[in-house]
Amino acid sequence: MTKPLRIGLIGCGFMGRAHSNAYNRVSNFFDLEYTPVLQAACARNAESAEAFAKTWGYASFETDWRTLVQRDDIDAIDICVPNHLHREMAIAVAEAGKIVLCEKPLALNTADGQAMCEAVEKAGVPNMVWYNYRRVPAVTLAHQLIQEGKLGRVFHYRANFLQDWTIADDLPQGGTALWRLDASSAGSGVTGDLLAHCIDTALWLNGAIRNVSAMTETFVKERHHNLTGKMEPVKIDDASAFLCHFENGSLGLFESTRYARGHKALYTFEINGEHASIKWDLHDLHRLEYFDHRDESKLRGWRSIHVTDHGGEHPYMDRWWVPGLQIGYEHSFVHQVADFLEGLATGTPVGPTFRDALQTQQVCDAVLASAECGSWKNVE
Ligand code: SOE
Image 1 (tube, rainbow, N blue to C red):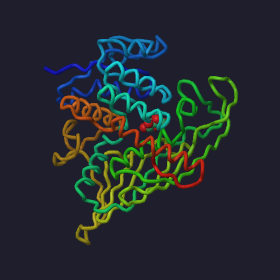
Image 2: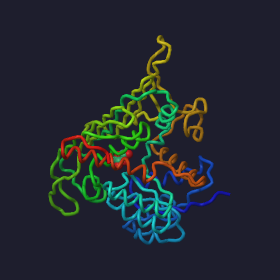
Image 3: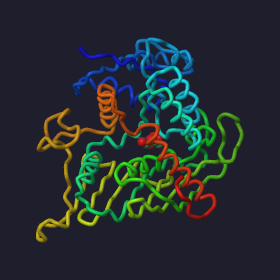
Image 4: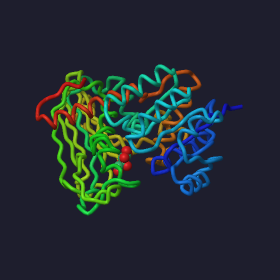
């Protein structure tokens, strides 16, 4: 007999769908002590909340998140709403003694993130932030290879996250779909939205970042605001890039933009070590490119490892199909839920916890501060 974990989800958009899909799938593929039970979905608009609940199999719906948080038939609340709402909701969930899962980035800024960490730690409630790319099997394999010391000393870490969906200058800011362009809802632009993914992966694979030197740009300075009905200054960064020193002595180079014509969601990273290098590309997410200088010289070259469990050793893949068949973006969320439920059963925190995600927030804040003042900034 498995134990139920009764979920209440706030926010019925794109991320709400990705998480709900993961809750629905996880017990079909992973043997776990806990089974998610979709108890209630919450959105301000009753029609949307009801339709969402019906589509994804939630037993009920709410239109007021505070009511959801107070319900005694719910164990865990999943926050999938714009960033400016994370702090208040997460603190209320922690104070209600419930498990809290929160979409990335953790908060608008470090101060809010710190308050959220203190609340979950004071309440002693399990918590996690949805930086899902850690759980793409090829990325998890990269982590394993690095932990095994295959790369040796690391010299370079390079990452990009490129999109092109905000180039048109008649795209408005604010409102349901376009809150990511509105600084009061998002906190920042690509720094918190895209670069934060690259930073989370980097901290996990390569350790802490000591300092950064950054530049940001807002290419379209004014946009129609859906909430005020007027042209308003754009206060988010459209592009953000930085250099950094990692604590392990390696150098980092990061770039994210929504102005890279032709790229919809190209997340790539490359790590160069003393003995070996690793490359990964979200558009070919089941492949890990690996070069090992210790190979015999006549065979030396980049290997393209198809991470589909040929020998039973690739992370997560033994749970899915037969070797050689692939999985995709949505599975990273299923893996994250599976790990979280396993952690719950064993009483082990599962990363990224709020505290882990606070480190990403601190790097993001250092990036924005460095871009603002034009000089190097230490990560506080
Ligand atoms: C932005 O377009 C976005 O949806 C991000 O918000 C997600 O975190 C990223 O994974 C894909 O792009």
